Length: 469
Image: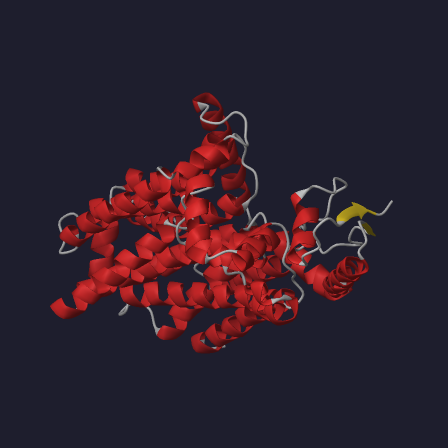
């Protein structure tokens, strides 16, 4: 087979893999914070509610707009189809942002087709390695709060590289776009806030002697200003009162290091990640013929570069432990993974150029048959291991379709109980829930926020939901 035939075959396979995740989105339903935020957004003026959230809950001035304008505020009949489109939109945005970043940074080194293949591969591997794709992609509140700002950061990379090759007038427009992307990312969550500061500071150090220096200094100061708006929000202190063991330095350091080792090992020892890393090294060595790229890899401080992906994980773990005393949901871990992957591969390329190649280490297969075998193993891993195993199984055995039917039946029961004036409604727990979503179901405590959220969304007032024994 020719190289182009192989690339087209890989493209087709990647689209098949992503089509499964789009298929999963056809069965998802809102839950947890989706319902409670939809109620808040439906029953209050947006600016007034944003002010209350800032003063009494958190400083997320951008993502709060999105969660308060969840599509289901339109009602379940009209809002649910839009809700199910959000994961697909986020996947398209991720691929588009990665593609734009590659085309802006390496326009002469990567063809459009190869840039698309890398962008698609990044998204497929990211979903595969997520500890919880339900929170990272399919749950609206989690996705727009944590995945969307990661996309903004990736788009900002594309903007910065495009800035270097633009006219003065275009540079002014790109600077404004970059500032808006940074403000949106920082204002979405605390992990994104720290990741933006980390990446902006690292970029300033790497491009200190370039034309980008003045721009990067200004953007770093702008990032700090946006971060201050989030960090010093009075609502943060109110939210922390709901947790114990907050602001404990020893606990934060100990657990953050432990979780960094845990998730770092899980990701780096994944067969798909290991084999993809080998292919990244092969790709990097192939690009060494481009002098500008080679000079960049040779001048970057390799120990600093090695520290960046580690710090991306550490901060993703440390912030929840510092503010709440627990890791809690895996949304922060998903965000750390998004930043970790490109930084880890960039660090690998730097070390390969400065250390491995200079010592004559042959770390990549030279045989085309071996490289094709690596691609085949990656493909099988992305179909049948980790998160993708659950997706394949759920689609095959119909558990997603059964979950969809149970949710629709639950909505009908709640609405009928409200119309009848019932005070108590007994509902069954989900039978055979899909493993790919890792759902949080209603609880035995009728005052649990899952139970109350379902009642309040359908305006049930005093109705209490109990678990059917």
